[in-house]
Image 1 (cartoon, rainbow, N blue to C red):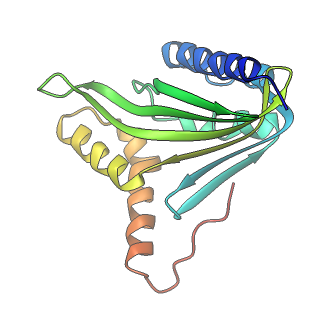
Image 2 (spheres, helix red, strand yellow):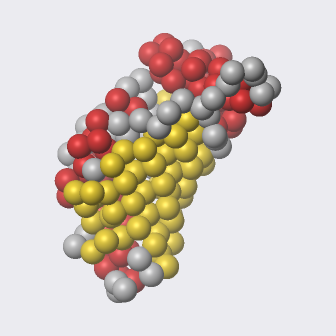
Length: 179
């Protein structure tokens, strides 16, 4: 068991690193500092796709590499976190570019479940967010002229298609294999 303060410091380091990544657009530099060599990072896309990375190299290549393409201009600020033993839960936003006419942010909520492994590092992360609300947000951004054509092509359109196929129980639908 780890001291609450130790786990909280590690979560705060992760939050600060991701805040710097929001500013710089470089999402891989902190992986070696904050994840164990054999860490597992999973992002679940509403049952349509699961991206699972095992080990730092895969985390860099998928979650903080390939999967960040098209998200330029977005940020992922944190609202807060909770710690319970070696487990932590963070609350963050998928925040799109620009502001709505009323001055509010284009954003949806997300949460991460983290397992602390000691020495300032995490051994497991599981991310969740509401894919339907994220698709609605992307539609809103597109209507405002703020959605990246790259993001629409490589993530929004395929995600919508998979979500609709799943909800309509389309013949032959099977979620894509984890990557």
